[in-house]
View (cartoon, one colour):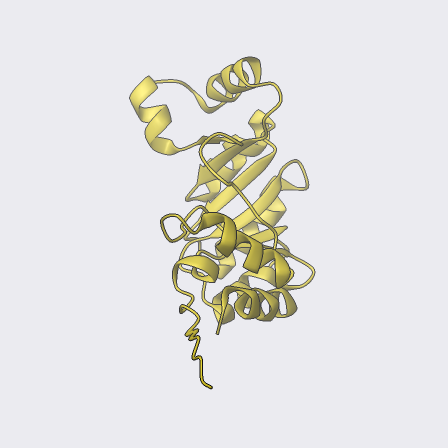
Length: 169
């Protein structure tokens, strides 16, 4: 199946949650693969490291900044960009929502934790489930009430099109 077909299948399985692609694309084919995802009904997400601020736990650890301080600094330095925080547990979700981030990336959380994250965030931030999303896992995650599911397999694992051009008389 192609990226477009995989995207269409994921969108059908995950509705009403958005199905997002990722930056994980074949070198030199990003635009083509992202166009295929969009053609299948998916949403192009994060074309590069330039279009959104992503705060990860490593950033906080390296800088010694609190979540709130990091978010405030990002908003000050990049006022036109959305701020997203990666959270791998419910404490991280709570801190990110309290800091007022636009999006919280729920990294490799169990279905129960995704459901709880929806309750913890309580609409303060949009929620993106991510990490090892197969079609079945994405559909299960969508049923928890998250806003979006990012599915790297739409691009990085889609098989290439076997296209040939035979000319005969």
